[in-house]
Image 1 (cartoon, rainbow, N blue to C red):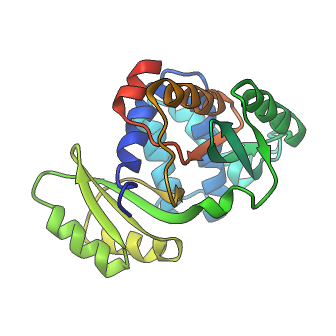
Image 2: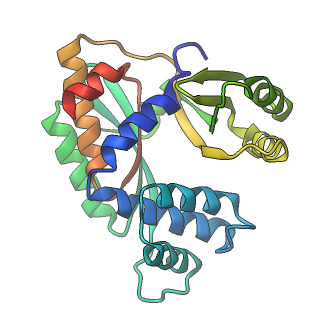
Amino acid sequence: MSGHSHWSTIKRKKGAADAKKGAVFTRLAREIALAARRGGGDPSMNVGLELAIDRAKNSNMPKESIERAIKRGTGEDKDAAELEEITYEGYLGRGTAAIIECVTENRNRTVADLRHILSKGGGDLASNGSVSWQFDRKAVFSVKSDGKNFDKAFEAALEGGADDVTEEDGYIEIIGAADTFKDILDSLVAAKFHIEDAGLRMIPNQEVELDFDQTVAVLKVINALEENDDVQNVFSNLKFGDEHIEAIE
């Protein structure tokens, strides 16, 4: 897993910048609705929903909006349009690729928007399977570190079947095979860890390293995708760091 252990750190830093954008509440609401649709509207019985609500609260999303999103997911809101989950594969330009996870009410609108954003950056949508082989789906968890609990987290993660446990910038990141997600989650909960973030993520097998200006240019394409209301997650094989994020903020 060398080279991929900073995923959650980068995600948090980009998330802090993304929180300034108008799309963040839309994305959070859809995440809550989907979690409620999959596992029910009671967060005490649905860990995925509980995590989604925590993320929404951390972004100062109004309580009424959270409740409305839950009702949409459970079907109580009869006026809300049906949401569809779609995953697209694409090229970002300069030899980089991406997996783009979307939630939309209008598939035609979404695909047109994605083509427009990608073409402006020198890329395009790709056929199914042409990009995904470059990625592995992994269970990824992030918990806060107090400087003393790494050994405890390491033990709990390994008990759940994790492959990699790292610590950086006050957080412990845990990565495992996709089919170990529930086991790792249960092990962390049993060890009384508060999970900051958890989910199945597409991790690149090999990252593409470009020069500074090219990296910033591709990162701008990723940001444009993430600003789209229908886009939930963008996973790329671009290698970038704090200095590239700061350059585009």
